[in-house]
Length: 129
Image 1 (cartoon, one colour):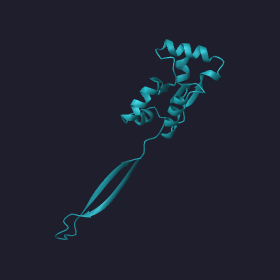
Image 2 (tube, one colour):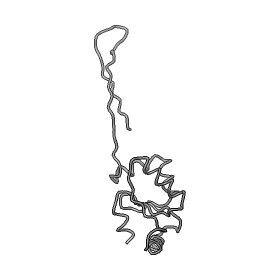
Image 3 (cartoon, helix red, strand yellow):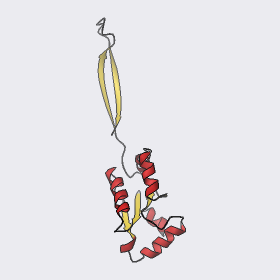
Image 4 (cartoon, one colour):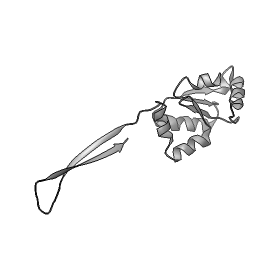
């Protein structure tokens, strides 16, 4: 049942309504532009069953528990580690939770400024936003 819920969206977070760490992880993921489904275990009728099923999957009893791209990523430590290493955004992009955008800028520069030969080179910059 948990795996089925984890596959309902590119990002699924199991949390508790009173957990500030869960709120922080949700905010971090939303700041990338993702729109996760959040299941607050303490507000669901079957919350205890879901919690037990998550533990059976190998999760700790603490929340949050995050699925990205139909895969169990883990808790707050794993999400923060991915973010610090610059890998969380790529994971969200691969899961189609967010889009990666690139801007191409170009300028023309004089090939030889000393001789004023009139030959220009194009310099291209690729910026990820």
